[in-house]
Image (tube, rainbow, N blue to C red; front, side, top):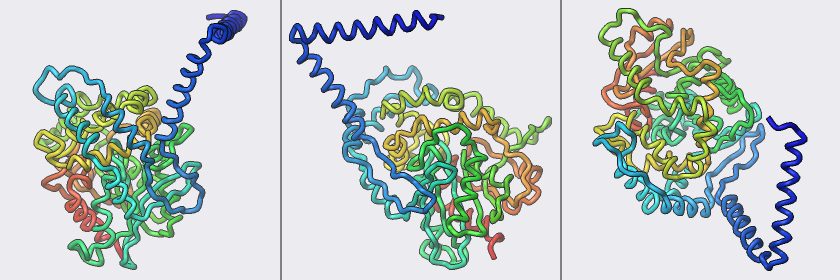
Length: 437
């Protein structure tokens, strides 16, 4: 290692060299070239700044919020997509090496030429949205109160690479069921927050935001909205947050709806248990590369995803192919526009690195496993056939002594509310029907 004296000498040499260069440039008439280069750099920084969306500062008040992405950010996106540099095509005839080149180019071309962010912006702004500061972080959330006075409050938590976009088709049917084939007594007051570091929530500037801390934030949010008795639901990291809530049992939380996995695998599994174990092994051995990267070096993966719109899109698009109940292509289950709504939310908020940190935080805290452990809170589960794994009911009964609802449905995957909004809505109505009153 260089000592401090050597380091100072090197710095002095660099400064001297830079001064000599500037003097020489002025002496030879090169100042115009130097000025032009500085102007280009300044313009580039200004353009990058203009293309960024700035969130308003949050306070402990519940402040109304509307999404408004600058046109310069949309123009910047299209420019980046148009200048994408592509690798050669894959050497296989399927998705086993990742997104096939033809599919990747088609998605990027649609995003560049046909996708309309303003359509999505109008759609999300039709919901009441707010921001409030909890534990130093501004939390964004959709909050729709039911017209039914006795509605049951529910908080719905997304994961990665999902977002609040996943729940947009279920909010109205849950909150106003009589307009969507339900009964007045099925109604929910619906709260859908963006996880810290995701979407229009702030990006934490310190470590420690694991599922337990997020759960404590949700336990602050619900009373802040005036709810004294409420339930929780979540998938993916949302399930982790909901598990944490179930362990913490904050005042007012009466029940939860998630998925389940045992703390210890059975030595002699039944056929149903073997199926679940095999599905989990497939994920661990073939589909978890992203998890290892985001769980160990979220900052590093953040750089290419923040710079390349195509890279950000395909990092997410691959998961919609792997984890939805499709026939080979993501578009079998989700529309291209719906997929790009979610991808665009990550892009315009520049949240590749900040969202990836949820893996790093929970890996270091020991909360990155499948199992949520034993839970005493009354629990419910709906099992969708193309979920990452399909646990048998026996596992839930062993870990959840107060299991009050279990159902295995015939369609849907990891993004249940996104893929099957009608079925997801029906499951929540049925699951929590016994918890009302």
